[in-house]
Image 1 (cartoon, rainbow, N blue to C red):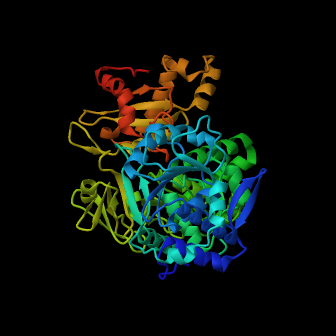
Image 2: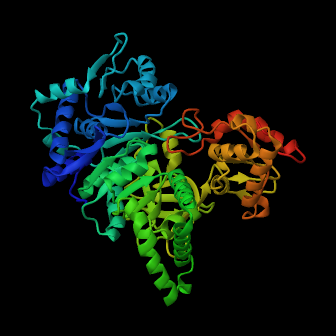
Image 3: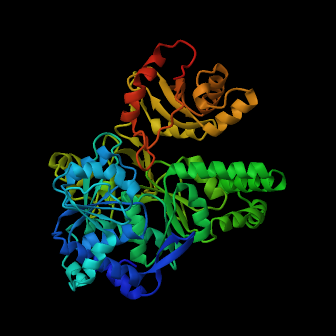
Length: 603
């Protein structure tokens, strides 16, 4: 359990390593199979790398940018940077050259650790433009074509330097206080240039305490986490790395989003976190798989789903007969499903964006323990989360221990507590705007119900105010549209307009199936001008409109065959849409929809 006597994150790790010794800590794929590193092995590597960094002249408070996929070296580098007295600056593996340049220049980093030649392709051109970078450490071989102006060292070389140094890293780490900065995490920039959020050791330790308090409901013992979200994201950084250390858990690193299902079966985790889009895709795959099986299995699954939904939504109607049937379905369906997910799951945590209530209930109904959390990087990051044993899935649960939450007069969610950031790196104006009178102004709109559970309605800056003065939530409508099998992605538009319109990205699998049945070209690019194809999409929009109020209904839409993606800058690394970037490309098409009297346009 978390210990209030831990002065910092590094000491927390070393004390836990002393207790755990030769037990496995980090699991990674080697030759196609998961292989472990023990707590003792990881502790030795952290000490060697920290000594190596100190031998290279890294000083107290200097910043080191870390660019890597989720892997044991990420863990080692993060703790070693902190142990050397420096500050970790995580950067997404998906960053562009301009993203890297902004972080390198803004942070004033002295060095960079990068994992591979592939990730170095976007990073090195940015490093070349930053004369303050003294050296790069490559975890894998980079094989540079020409010698750059800065020093390039391999991971092994720096480890070797540390092996020859006898500095007592554990003793040095004890000098770090809770008030000192542990990391600077740059926000994903859904609304502009990313800002560097300074989190001290105390804020992250306070967040861990709150998370442990929540998980105490599921009897913590012999836990295993599957690390899926990027460790450069504040949520995975705290909940996927520091929390497992605090409770003595094992960490398995997923191979990538396409391999998560297989990794779950192999690792048999008890806890993992993912973004809502992962759960939406997983729901579709489960449903499609059951539909293909057909027959008795499909009917049993649908019965388990129906009874599970009823048990959650209307428990008062669940009489003796219903409980007997539900118990039988538990054995015939839900136990087998849980076995496919490793058989040990205690919590599947959705975070990073709102989870559609129907998706959440789907997983609960079939026996998989989904809960929804809410947080912000500026709060280290967890603020509230559903309680595992009594989740209210239309909310994000009550605030965690140590987080005080209230709602401002305009509906904005305010947060106070030791978990808050120190401020934005070198941006006092933005820091003063974000934290006023000790309260973090989250920019989110919400309400607290009679049970003390928090419900998020929208981002304050994302709310659409139509020409009639009505406040509308685009995220909720976009979520409903993207649940349709015909639609992969959607963005709603309509600020200061008489009604809402939408930009839709068709689901390519559905589009190919539709084209085959209709004997049309099977490329989405060829279909977006087809009137029958647009009519089919219009029918899907119509189905969604049936569940919306009059002012929420989508009156027109335009179609693009090009998905929103991280590569084109229209999604953040956690798969949230960047509205301002999308509007730069599609604003004229969306504006034109208000001039169209009847039919939707296609791009």
